Amino acid sequence: MSIAEIQQTVDRWISGTGAGYFSPLTNTAILAEECGEIASIMARRYGDQRAKQSDAVSDTALADEMADLLWVLCALANQTGIDLQLAFKNNLLKKNVRDGRRFS
Figure 1: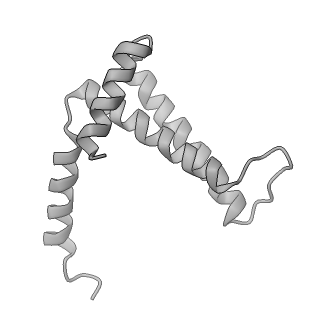
Figure 2: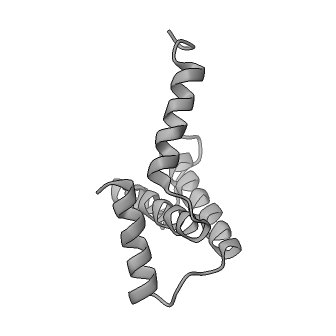
């Protein structure tokens, strides 16, 4: 799927199957929550924290949390009229111009 297709899929699901969009502020809070869930898994897997037996730190759990993050990011982009595919393309161009020789 392209980023545009992912955004469209999220919109169709939220508008059809779901109960509609949460407010942008609520989705921003959910975005932060998803980042925290990823950070928690990463701290336990790669950092110094030890996982409790009840903590899921599998590849599946990490992948699922990353997909949740992408979902909420797409929802926010849809709500604010941002084409993430175009934004990413422009961001990559900016990085290439600014940092193209920085690390070599």
